[in-house]
Amino acid sequence: MGAPREIVDSVESILGIYFSGVRHSARAAFILCDELVEMSCKLRARAENYRFDMGCSFHDAWNAVGVGLDPVVLGNAVQHNRSTRNMMQHNSAAATVDDQHCADAILGVVEVIDHCWPGTSDAMFKMWMQCAIRVVRLYSNCGSFSLQQRFEEAMGEEDWEAEKRYPKGSEVFITPGRRYHWGLLLRESPELVEQVLNRLEIP
Image 1 (cartoon, rainbow, N blue to C red):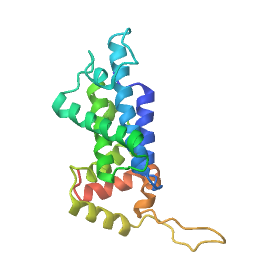
Image 2: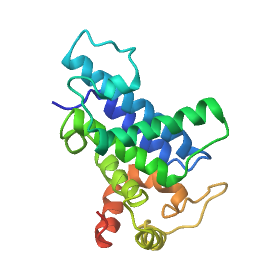
Image 3: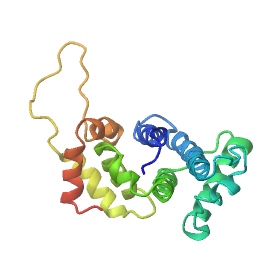
């Protein structure tokens, strides 16, 4: 049994924001990650027990029957993210997180979803989402700085356009290999990004 459609759609939204290139995208994606973890736990608990109180605390949700996140493997990480989110929203409106912290939170969301509904990320995530998660992993705490550099160089040097032409009138050419445009490239040509990841042996 895979995750409910709204869970998968929420992951797609988070990835879209993370790769959007807009200012403070990591902050927005991070906050949504925290909310999605809570929603996932509560929906899974409600599936196990239709009387489950959806208004319960975050801690009660991830410890509920049918959820039971491992307190060390996942519990500590999601609780730490919740504390950071609370600090950002209630204590310092200007506070934010860096790309790595956000990437860690995205991977945590995927882990929680696969814990609650095993196999969801393999069976229900679109190809571009699976490819995007590989890139997220590269920029997370699990990633390698040297591989990040090599990946960025390879993306910039890749020949993304089969047909070369000059801009017409007010056209603005987009250089897909620039990180700012990776979101567009991941959606339109995930198989080409996969080729770069595979060539560099990035997991």
